Length: 101
Image (tube, rainbow, N blue to C red; front, side, top):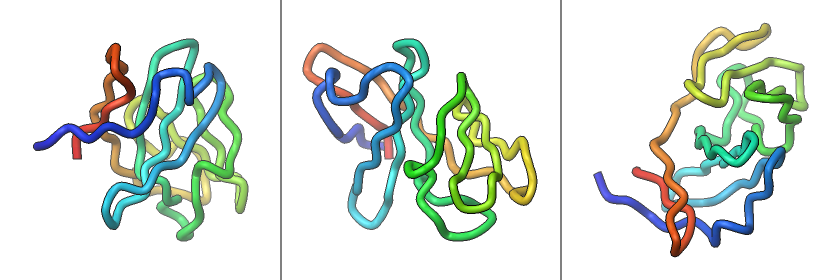
């Protein structure tokens, strides 16, 4: 699977979420204390951007109904979501942030 460059490494600060469009996909990158994670940027409960939500440690809360997800795995950790969201491989390199599609 190809790696795609999303951003400069300084565009996703620790404790923040940033959304990117890659082809037809929307991907949210979460920076947890300098470690990057990437998930599909759509809540599995209702089609709403997770990048609008709140990041608390490794937990991402959807703004719409409060569903929570583990940013490390995409696993749903709080209702009303029960299905996981897709997690992507992500790397920070010297020349930017890359995700494997």
